[in-house]
Image (cartoon, rainbow, N blue to C red; front, side, top):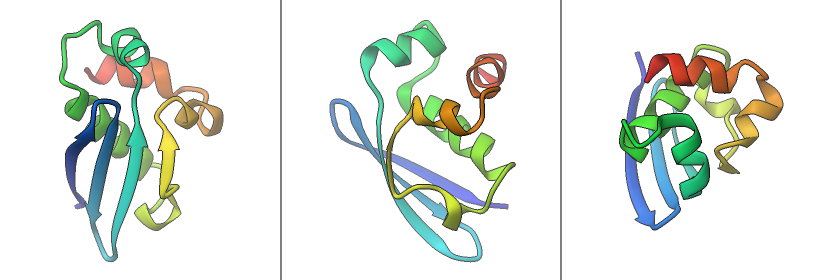
Length: 89
């Protein structure tokens, strides 16, 4: 089971460390508009990002996840992302 740590670095930028067989670090940007779209303000940005990484880890290993990306990019690779993450939160 992977351990996911999310740390806010700047207003819209988060560092995510995933500890699994290999440890990886990712830089994720999350705009306020996209955060509101997915959560309606009901979950923290950190929770949204953590759940997003859980979603990704169900589909690929942490070493396959991009090192830097904007959170909406997940939907480009996995069209079911937004509906799935809204249900999770």
